[in-house]
Amino acid sequence: MASVAHRVWNETLTFLALAFLVAFSYPAFVDPVPSSTQTLLNIVQWVSWIAFAADLIYGLYKAKDKKKYLMKHPLEVGAVLLPFLRPLRLLRVISFGSLVIQKVAVGRQFAITIKVIITSIFVAYISAVQITIIERDTDGSNIKKFGDGLWWAMTTVTTVGYGDRFPTTTEGRFLAVGLMIMGISLMGVITASVASWFVKMGQGESTK
Image (cartoon, rainbow, N blue to C red; front, side):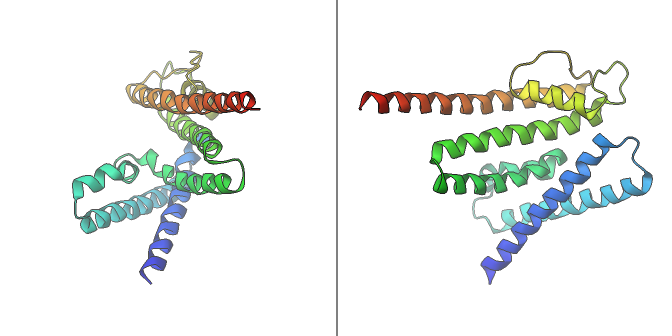
């Protein structure tokens, strides 16, 4: 019974993360947002925050070592402290998908690579939404539409950095620093996985 309740609660949090993602993304595509719609978006975001906060507090309450619990659950802590990280709970779906790929298709390494690529795209999308909302109404900004924000996010997370789109606000620059650090890490994993794959291919050829 407890396991069923736990599964239902996790599915509820996943649904709320998806609902939050929609509510979070909407202002990046529609400007200005009608007041009635904004009220609904605010309700969705507050409900999701309360659910994530309750989940974190309950987990802390049940944990014997609270410090260790916080260190092992950075995503849950981030989802409560930083609103735009809440949709990252959906990465659990990606984790499940990578396990399926691992068992059905070509193995663990390929599954991890696919997971990292999808994670990179997902993080870039969230960053694009956030940077568009931050920069759009700022004088002198060159990120005015979601397309501009997405182009900036993709060139940043892939460490290309053309420089034709860039944040001008302090908040936008903090977001850029976080995306740069994450981009270097994610691209490093992808590069290492591809290099390892080529090495294994070379070793396979040499043993024939």
